[in-house]
Each structure stands twice: as C-alpha cells, then as structure tokens.
Amino acid sequence: MRSGVRAILGDDLWAYPLSKRTALFTYYSRINNKKNAIDDFAINGLGVSTGADPQTFALGMRHYF
Image (cartoon, rainbow, N blue to C red):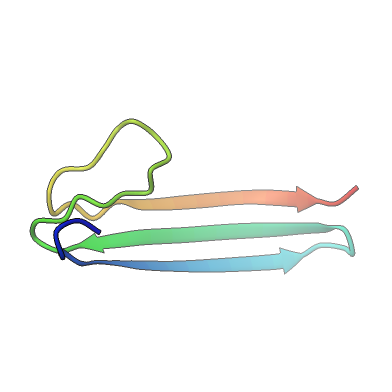
C-alpha cells in the first residue's frame, strides 16, 4: 500500500468435485480502493485509475493426472 492509503481485498472460491480427480471451480476477487489508492492485481499492464475498484472472475475445470 502506498503512503498509508488503505485498500481492502475480498475474494471467494467455490469448487465442485465431479470425480476424485476432476473438479469445477469459480473464483471472484475485488479490491476496494480508498479515495487515493491505486492498488491492483498486478497481472497485466492495464493499470487502474485512482480510487477505482478492480475485480476479476474466473470459471474453470481442474483435472489431476
């Protein structure tokens, strides 16, 4: 966090097993930035505006070999 400005990160993960080795999953995450914060997920070069609240959603299937 920069200059004492705070941001709050919240996330949820849900998984549903289809078998012993395969599962469906969904994931949601959001950063609630305060007025002057610019924290983001640091996964791409898009960046966020000051005070913006970036969020992400993922849906997938996992299989263990």
